[in-house]
Image (cartoon, rainbow, N blue to C red; front, side, top):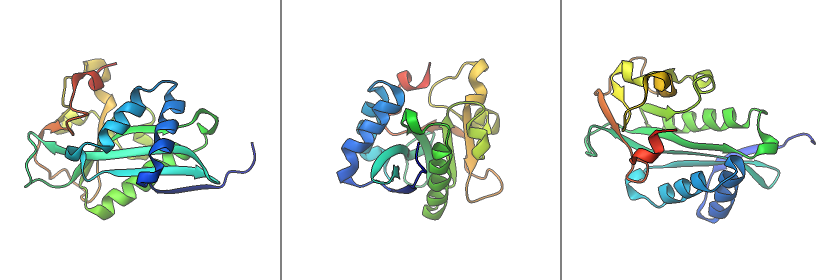
Length: 185
């Protein structure tokens, strides 16, 4: 493969097809692409942060962060997000692109004032980027029960505070993501 010329930017409405293509290629099916499409059209997910990674002009990676709440969707809560999904097309995987998308996303979320970011993901990958395993131990339970053997896959990261000062409780995601099928293997 030639030398990579990677750049990351916020996605635009005109990028919609590229986003879905990246998601489909990365996962080998359309489940995450459909989830992404639904989340991008779900007003309960706002404010969203959607970033695309490019090599030259080719879209090769995508990450989406959507709004979450604690216990209920009320307006008097601090800004918090969940990362779902993260995708890099196969020929660009294991080259740091996913990590670059995560870091850029966390930086932008911090600038937006987001206080916490959650993820349900690979127990060895996400801690490299500052996510703390077993968010439930810190008082933040997932929208649906997570089996004990996967407790460390439910993670959290504080962005603008050294301590967890946000009210504890059950995370409530956007309507699209707040369904049991997204919370089990």
